[in-house]
Length: 319
Image (cartoon, rainbow, N blue to C red):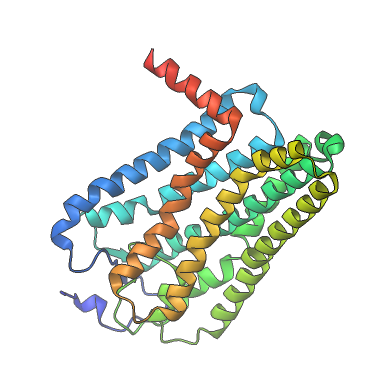
């Protein structure tokens, strides 16, 4: 593989050096063919999430807490797609091969921040489902528009404020290893792997964030469903079980779609050093593309209100 001198020489702190983005190594001749499904995935991802946002925005009947959280999820997925589309498709289209340090740090900030935001939104949706099932008479009084707005602002602050220190810290590292990233986009873990500076603060701080946000969210989501099951088991009627399934299946699928890829990527970074570069790139792309692609499909199929209005929207476009 050809490496420019900038990819090999040591970079002093504060220097805006370039890093080589990794596509499917050894398959460069097939990039034009790979670009077709990847472009289609991005188009479907952007179209699907935009349609969900459009339907919720234009339908007054959907101006309810459940759909406010769904719009937050769709907006998060839309932004995740927009934050990576240039580098992922740029490599396949032959537009770019390198990215400078400032752009890489900015992209990693949005990728990690949006991941935390998606986790927080899924937790908010779990709280919404818990109130709807366990305390339905007070649902509208608990989840008011004002409270939803405050929850949304808290999610944004929680996701993008606390991550600033470890991301800004990346700017002041000395990068003396080969400047070759493991993916077609920038992740904080990748830059740490290339750094020769003391990374202990960055690693421990980021680990604390993962525990306090991703792990805590997963535990609270699980706890909310334990409470929901406990409440439904007290009634134990067939109708209640059917209602529980219809109410929660979309959210459960969205939780699995988010956490399975992110756990897989973490395991690959931690234990997958023996894996081929292609495996790293593939799992990284699944982590980035799978939730934004699948979530609109899940909610369009499983949520009756969204499904009905999607069909109506397509009928209007057709006729």
